[in-house]
Image (cartoon, rainbow, N blue to C red):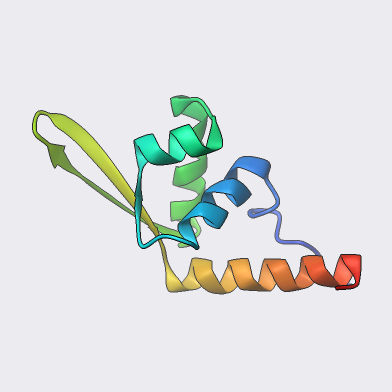
Length: 93
């Protein structure tokens, strides 16, 4: 049996990827609200996903406030689909 991708097996990273798989992009505030995580924890997990090439992060300004926009990359999309397929094999779906 294949091993589950440890990068995606984290609850918060899996939640972020699940959200991003269903939207074109999401900002940091939206992800923080949807995942009910702290800003610090979310920031660390987004960095891990970005370092792996699973998400793209763009930073810009919205008025005087910084804005962080995240989107899933092709690599991330493929990794997520593979993760779901492996998970299905564990539960015989």
